[in-house]
Length: 411
Image 1 (cartoon, helix red, strand yellow):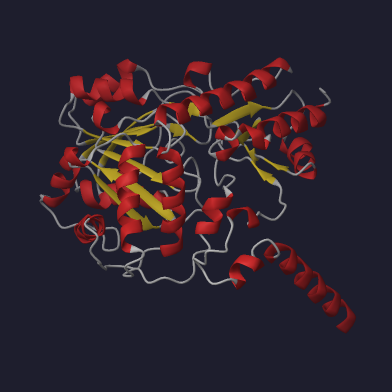
Image 2: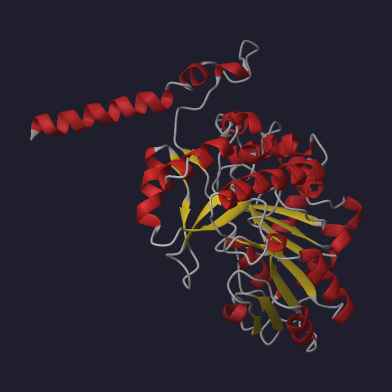
């Protein structure tokens, strides 16, 4: 018994040493010293993570996430938070002049839905939800507009749903369960034409920084996202951009908000203060994640966003072309509505997840199983966002294709 415990403890210590070895020289050195070199930091060896989020993270982002303990009111941190809010507008092609308001709060992408429900929905409001329902919790009358698996709702169905002039319509930009990409710009134009007072809410958790989003040009009112997908930052931040119109509607509610932590009345003044380089407090922000996000956003906006989108399109085409060449099919009904940051691949006939995914894991490749309950056993999902898509010298995409071909005996 004692020997077994000792062996287990030894294995744990060795594993910890292996994990810490790349960062120990950095942790030991005083932060910010002039002798530090980025080249000294390298991630520990690990399996390639190619699921639709979380994704692979760059060395600079992970290093920023290792920032020493820093007060959220520190003069060093305040401008970093403020700059991150400004950079988020740039990524979503919005401007400060438009009155849009970025909001970064500790939480998951799902928290963004709570933000919309708490701040914009009142009891009795009508919400049109494309594909999935959520706002019944907040007393809304929900009209779900569904599509067959692998497809998007028809224009006719959307226009019919808009005839009642709902307060909100929600669009899932990329359905993570099926890899379907909704034509958000087109749907937004339908809303503007048939029900211009309706607020347009885009679920962009799986599309920010990998798909085209033009917040101001499309007339969006809320974009909901998170950090662990296209933004390339460890999970833990709810990312929201709200239009001036959405903020004003929230401020002029007829009934009290049904939430506390997620209330924009509490958070928006905090965000405005940080953008103005003033310390502010409601609840403690995840300081290290903000540093990591700041690092990633700077990298993203160092080139035109259009180039990043094109890089993701190229990555998507490579993956889909290679898989199609060996006879595999996809969940989306056509390439026109297939996401560029992920691919939902149907298994060959007779195979399921246990036949494929463990063998890929043996080759240090981690993909995701199916998620949509109607076809959950029929397909698997590959994520190709962030550094995996834009830094082709890493060879991530080629490794995935090689692994799939070997497992399926197609090499």
